[in-house]
Image 1 (tube, one colour):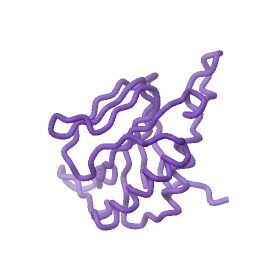
Image 2 (image 1 turned 90 degrees about the vertical axis):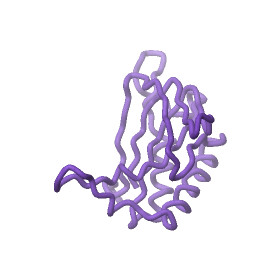
Image 3 (image 1 turned 45 degrees about the vertical axis):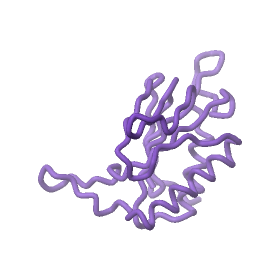
Image 4 (image 1 turned 60 degrees about the vertical axis):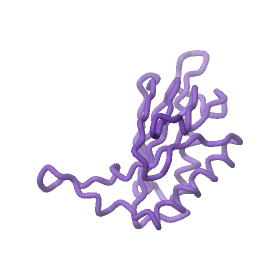
Length: 152
């Protein structure tokens, strides 16, 4: 799994002109799922996202986590995070999981984030043409990949 985590002061998702999810302070998380991903990957990534200390403390240092600022999460599925661009100008998405594999893991991620934050995770609609608006606060943008984690 690959996630792009953006610290935002607000973010929203629209599908066909209707808001499907919106937050104020928190994280916009773009989530890519590949064929090799498992529930263990989702669990690790959910823990990392919710524990990431990138919000400013009273001294302006990034020491606070999502819970410390009563933040929320907007989770957006994005298979294009696994684009392969080595050959030609048309990206290949062969590493991205097919919907029958990706949807259950995406739903598991929503459930895990709900449990860890104690809040309902705002979302887009899997596979839809989504319009995402955000104000990136900082900017703070962090890339996480479960294949890069230390297993110790």
